[in-house]
Length: 253
Ligand code: TYD
Image (tube, rainbow, N blue to C red):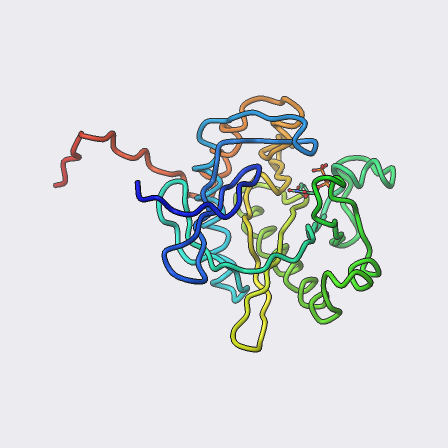
């Protein structure tokens, strides 16, 4: 394999310099982490599923006019994306109560919220990604007021798209997290949905049974994470085909 420059190694992905300026290759690893990386495991096949699911969601968003950093999937584990400056915020949209909002506000898990609730966390692992308000974001200059208006509108569009896509296959989109990047075109900047959208960063429950089909399966030891993500991919019709074993040509009629 040709040597290429590693730009960053995260918990679930490694980023490499892309083939052209302004591009990056995102490599999806099989590592799963939870509770700010206190829990860690390698789950075979997770990276392949997240790569393909993220491609599916990013392409769909592009088709409805939501800008993303996605360019194309390169292979089972890698995708080419536009390099952007990531705004240091985790943007969370919640439709039903789960996770930290339950503890924080004393709401029962699964309660439908009166409307989608958008929260912002400051991206800093050492601090445990603390919840911040728009006051903090403005005061510390992480994003401008115009950025925040655009981010809110992007987050709600992603929520409507993802809720609809999931509803069509019998899955409830409970909540999710996105990251937003800035791309500079000359003097202008535009915001795009960046990073990934996958069951690692969403809560997905089967509508009929309530079965969890997301990273909570790993967080709470509820069974096989690969089986859960495979079920999401199967329902969406994007199950990766097994690549042919090396050295064994496939007969084409
Ligand atoms: P939240 O309930 O705030 O935290 P936790 O997952 O630790 O209970 O998370 C809301 C949604 O956002 C959930 O689907 C997980 C996702 N999320 C991430 O993927 N990464 C993050 O760093 C954070 C804070 C949330």
